[in-house]
Length: 166
Image (cartoon, rainbow, N blue to C red; front, side, top):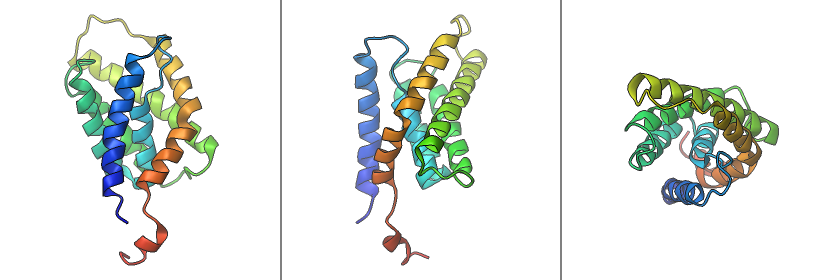
């Protein structure tokens, strides 16, 4: 069974889920960034190329909503996917503690890159929401094992299918 339809559903479902959860968010700054977590999980299980592609596509989709200057989220999520794919060579993403470490470090790096790009390329007049960066990073850390397990089911190719390719 090929995983292409599941990857497409993961891409579309991830975007729709992020937008609907963000719209229904009751407590400000305590909504996990599911697209970032899915990008990090794709990097951990599929490698940097898939994570970069998904991150860039999801980022451009988020930028069409007018959250940031067009292209900034795409670039930041692309970098997060690349770093996640590179780190997956040295860190085993099967354990919950390593998934939480992926989420915490990836969230902080993502928001630092996003704020840097926003200052350089975007609207300079906005204040830096440092409290929201830390609160969303902590919420991402708590939600990471569930998102990683979902992504692993959709994104990994079974071992018996890899034997014919090698």
